[in-house]
Amino acid sequence: MGRVLDRRGMEKSSAAFRLDSVDAGSYVVVTLGGGTGFLRKLAGLGIYTGSRIEVIKSAKGQGPLILSVKGSQVALGRGVAARIIVKPA
Image 1 (tube, rainbow, N blue to C red):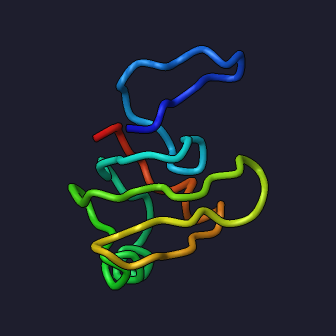
Image 2 (cartoon, rainbow, N blue to C red):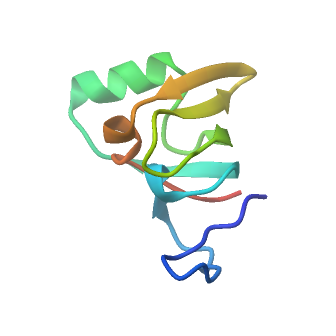
Image 3 (tube, rainbow, N blue to C red):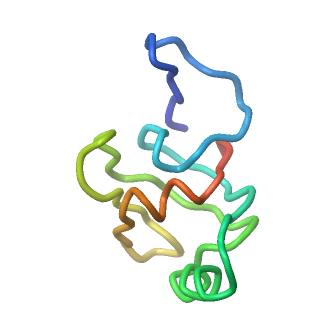
């Protein structure tokens, strides 16, 4: 499981976090913020509430996140990732 760190580098508790703020590791999607079209787009990628995702690459603040979802790799922009709330798996 990937560690989630705060701004000072201290490990955070297992609460929920925005996907764009986590390190590489396994997570479970808690909530998705967005309208019907946004939710439909994510569902087409296999991302929905309760789904398990693996963050492969998360260079904070730089470029897209690379995820593994149901055996497929998916790239998400930071704006999209900011609307996905996850907790460590």
